[in-house]
Each structure stands twice: as C-alpha cells, then as structure tokens.
Image (tube, rainbow, N blue to C red; front, side, top):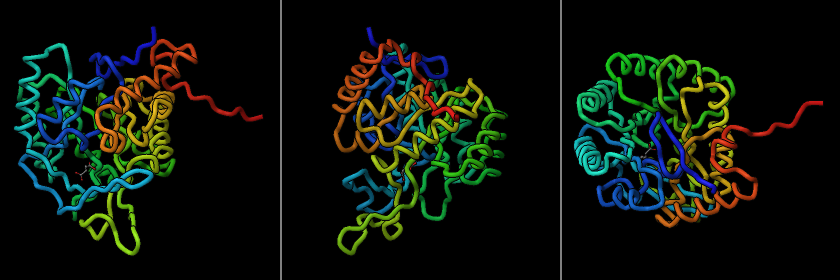
Length: 313
Ligand code: SIN
C-alpha cells in the first residue's frame, strides 16, 4: 500500500503536500479549505505584527510558465493567525499546522517570536527570511551576517520548533556559507525556495504588475531546477536533524517526486495551487502515488534524498 505520509519535527502528516505561504492562506476560510483538502497541513500567510494591506494592485499575475508577484506581505496580523491556530489546536489536537511570520525589523521579528513562544501554540513556526517584495527591505537571508545574528538572538529565547523560509541561492560558495550558519542552530527545517526575486515579465511593451515598476518574485515552472538545486544542496550540507521543505515548480507528481528525491520531507504548492485550486493536491498526490507504485516504493522515505549521480570514469 503506497503512502505519501511524512513527518516534520517529530509531527506526523497524512500527506507530504501542502500550500506554500502566500497561496490559499490569507484568511481563516482559505486556511480551513486547505485543511479540508487532500493537503497534509497548511502554512499561514506570513504574519507581521500588525495588519498590512501590502503593495498596490495589480500585484500578482499568472503567466504561461509560472507567475510573478509583488504582494508586499499583505496579511491580517499575527493575532489573527495565532488565535485561529490556537482554536484549531483545541478542536483538532491530532493535527499540526505551520505559522509563518516575519517582522518589518529585527525588533519586530523578536516581538513576534516572543509572543509565539509565550503562547500555547504547539505547532511549527516558519520564519520568512526571503520576501523579495517589500520596497526598501532586502531579502534577509541574502545578508549572512544579519541572518546569523538574528538566529543567534532568536535561539536565546525561542524553544519551539522553528524553520526558515529561504530565497534561492545560485552559487556553491553561498550554499556552503549559508549551511555553515544554519548548522549552528537547532532549526527544525529549512524551506527551499521562495520565489526567484525581482524578475520582470513584459506583455507588449508593458510590465504586468504595478509595484516596483513591474519587478516581482517569479514562481512556477521557471524555477523548478533552481528549487531542486537548493533542496539538494542543503540536503547535502545540513545536519540530518534539519529537515527540508521543497517548494518551487511543482506542477505534477513527477515534480513532487523530484523534490523528495533531492531530499525534501514535505513539498509545497504555490503557483500551481493559485492556478489550479485545491484539486491540485489530489491530482498531484495521485500522480506521485502512481510513480511510487511503478518504482516499488511504499513510503517517501524509500527514495527521499536518494538522487543518483553519474559516476566519474
Ligand atoms: C509577498 O507577500 O510579497 C510574498 C511573500 C514572500 O515572497 O515571502
């Protein structure tokens, strides 16, 4: 009997597919819909301390091979998502969900994480170090010194399971440097990757989104090779206790299979979920199960991380 169940941070999930932060996760209704779908769990929209309306519209556009967005972290504010998760924890204690957060400054990030630490929340927290879309705010994880000092401070008070959402890296030296930093901390997971930041998509002579004169994060089919490279590079370098969530370019069961082959314990759908809706979870799970059956794999642990290389002669 083929199963796509998985575990992350010691929590069990009935399916290894879930939404990526930003898609189907802005409101309780959207989160409840993901919860009732074939997804194994959900992650909230990245919460800042207070409500944010985000960047001016149009700020998201589907394009033939993916999407471009410059949302600018619109969200309902931390209390909205945390209260909902605390409610769910009472109602469905057997399930675990993920809270995504980041502050608009290091101080705000610490205020948020201290609130989460002080709360009764028992699930997983994801610290988003990679939003490319807030004008004037760089993607935190591209600044290794800032990332290291932020994590160092966080782990002086944060004792709950914590993961980080990463931007894509493109250089082997950066994989080495980033992994050396992450390995210093008791992270539960890293999530590779957020959108490829600051692309441009043009129709006729005009950009397709308004913020930042059209510059935005690229998702979907365009980014699968980059996403797979990041998943595998961190799988090769991180302490085995730090698990990996694979995100980027998952349109089919084959794409999910490749993320797991590269080392992902959980796989997230962003652009595909936005384009296809919740039915994508069922379709991609079914396709993944067919591949597993054909190959004689019963669980994702049978092939996770077991990417083959071409031997040098
Ligand atoms: C956004 O809200 O701008 C997208 C979220 C992200 O890229 O982290």
